[in-house]
Length: 321
Image 1: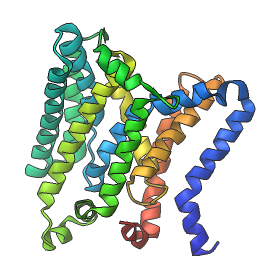
Image 2 (image 1 turned 180 degrees about the vertical axis):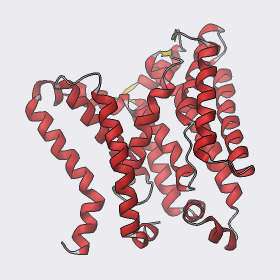
Image 3 (image 1 turned 90 degrees about the vertical axis):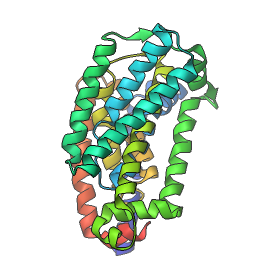
């Protein structure tokens, strides 16, 4: 295979496999899989996962793994139920407090990681565990009665899909533009690729890594608010359920479109590729265990393949910025 063809396969191979997967499930379960209801459910229901994943890309690009983002989503979701549904706070006031909490969580992560030199995995894993316990301390059971306006907004149908799906696409577009066409996005890539070299060129590595972690916390908190709207309730146990899917989507996304680099459109493709696989297998009767097995296998293979691609063509990954 020529280098040009090999590059095309690396960039678009996942999309080809996705197309084959859709065709196979369509043949095996045409009356269930190939319906507007199933397609709409796949695209709309996974929009919160997509938004959460996109919010993590800057931190990962800066070589800072934030494992606390799913837990930040979870406590944001729980706080909205407690403040808005239980204590009847106005939605805007509850949202302001929640987003501020997300920024604070990101700032605390940055203080320990960037300021004190803590290991990102250890620090954010600890933060996530703390937040998971705090969510259960706030309310141990799901809470109904979320703002009707928020529910209507997130579920509002546009061309057969919920509005939250288009919010996810808009964030993907913005993330792609930021990473590809802005000096800040390019600097962020250099911070992750080589912080010492970035410092020598005048880039404030501390500022970029701190901003990326704060951004991760803010987007995770906003995602928690939107998730509560789509579900119509809050659930204090929902955060941990996003941990495996979000990183499986992110790392698988780094193997496509722009292989070897965390990228917005690769993340979009990967999130919906994985959801398509899980949905199709569940329609075939493999429910329950298949979700964890599928996402777990995808995460291991994606992380491994992404590293292989980066080692094989480091210049290509850098040239794509």
